[in-house]
Length: 112
Length: 115
Image 1: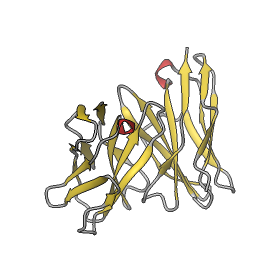
Image 2 (image 1 turned 120 degrees about the vertical axis):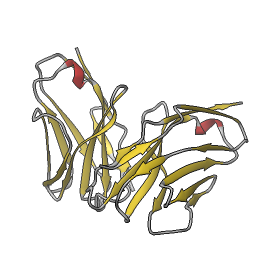
Image 3 (image 1 turned 90 degrees about the vertical axis):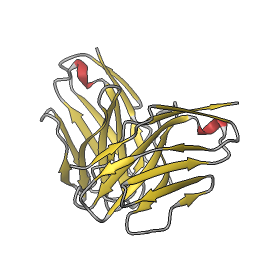
Image 4 (image 1 turned 135 degrees about the horizontal axis):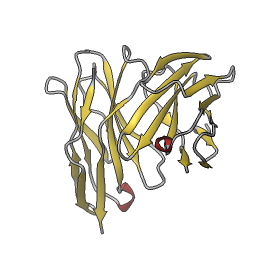
């Protein structure tokens, strides 16, 4: 079974731009969660989508949004990028959400 | 709110030896999952082992085993016969049904394996 895939793997943007990251979960997994990893804050939960609905949300500003499609693929969007948004963005998929989650390789976002 | 604490920022072990990484957590729930994830330099987060809170038996996956002490809220990872490929950052994580899919991670322990 193929693992979780994320595209692109690396991204460089400038302040004020917006960016869209994509995540394809493991086949059959309906839950996709997004996490931000930074050296200072560690791993922080952004949000979770289950069957195309946002089911859970972390403590991030409204500039961070997401969606999920009928095939369970998910996208995350960050508008009006700030320097502090530079991070590794990880997505994880699972069957139910609150059980084991399998992670993708991440997207490294650099904001200049 | 649930919290997960890893008190050892760095650990080192000799190849073929055994090492134990510590993790404590705080929760008022009775049903939850605990995990150990490994993040090598590639940054890919890899699930090492899982423990369901209602199971008293400690989980084991090949050279990896846990010591789950529910009353003490302790969840340590033992790596036996350490290999060079075990070198990575290890994260302890918690999730429960009431927290939804929100994994709560510890700060991580950087494990070095010396040849």
